[in-house]
Image (cartoon, rainbow, N blue to C red):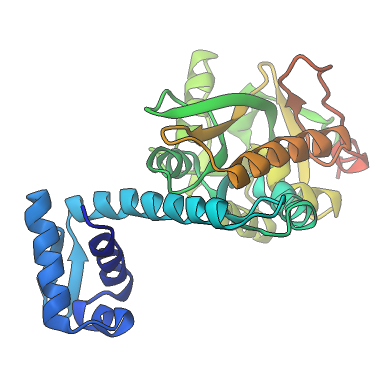
Length: 325
């Protein structure tokens, strides 16, 4: 496959039409159309569905876009490594952070990376489990911190942190302590993901195994939407502490640790090792892990580091314990 044709293909996808892409790449429209036909002939599949309004991708086109994004990013990283002669790593590195971890971790990691590796262009995405796995599998991101990593081809992983789950809402009945038993969740109207949401399935299975049920009254798929709903009305959700750490610390929300049994998840560092990691990616991967460890040690991130080092799960300040109405 010719690299120029892959770049032309990406331009067509981004522009939404061959006419718009031809202006972007400064190539006559008939010539660009010829390149796209040649690419389809070479692969033996249709990449586009063409209409008067432009083009949309076929399934094969979507797969090529995913793989092509990874290939072009890797080529760009190699170019930086070959051309640059300085000691500091150079190039773009893209990472994904579980959506519930991003509020605490993303900014901290970004500014640490900016200070330590000023020549690295760090791009951060917050993503849900399935999306993150796909991003790692296809190479669209270099490194991800995601829960419950399954076995994926060419993807390596390292368990890093275990987090407990909490019942979170604006207020709780008087007399409740800092915990809530799993069986008592049925007394709280919950906002959770739809029926195919990975965590909802896991939580419902745990409750079913223990002989309990959940009272899910609202289905949504976004942590910011959860936040808005429980801040605005009589509803609760089940999340790791990190998802709403700022709101809990500020008193806008309260949290009760779920016990008997506790509900936990393991988050792992995951990366696609099929082509090896660039120098810049190795640097960010190491800093990524360091930042998680630092935040846990400082009590800014509630969790237990999974390593041979002493396990640490500091309890946050009064916002976690002093949560009675």
